[in-house]
Image (spheres, rainbow, N blue to C red):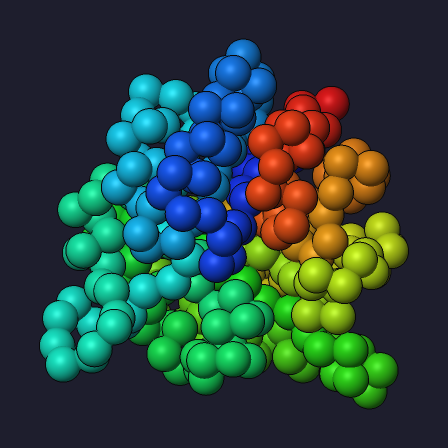
Length: 254
């Protein structure tokens, strides 16, 4: 990485893996990535497997992330989990604003701005997900959508916090579809995200890590990770198998 930013490869399991399955996965992954240097590795796991994965990865180079959280610290929010509950488990961070959370569960940019601050307050590393739908891209509204999501998501943060944010650009039309953004599309969007960060905190734009997500696989990872503004990947389906995920991690070190 000529940028000086350490790449991050994070696997988002979504609603997959029981604790037993998660344990089998991590025992298959750890030997494959134990000697890898110059790249951060994370797994984003269901709430039920968080404690087991924290315990099983302790002392390794694999960090554990939750997949969402509530914006307040406590309250009458049945079924929700707060940032302090996550930090008590020693998880490293949390994914916020994944397109499935936005589309299926009604997460708003306004709530996400509160969640971002709550994550930092609890000592968690947030990964903010942004991206446009196929219809928005067809209407040439990609930049408008990204501007709204990035500006709202970072609204409550100071420059030092913004520099530590990870942003994952995930074109919604490429998530789980097998369709991948072309290198030009990915680079243009990620560079635009970085420019949006620069509008709010110029110095932070050089430090913030921007990932690409959307049908990342071992056979396309190297090309995507070589793009000048791409600092890693948020991996979906390919993160469910330790061999494939380890190959993507390896591609980030090339």
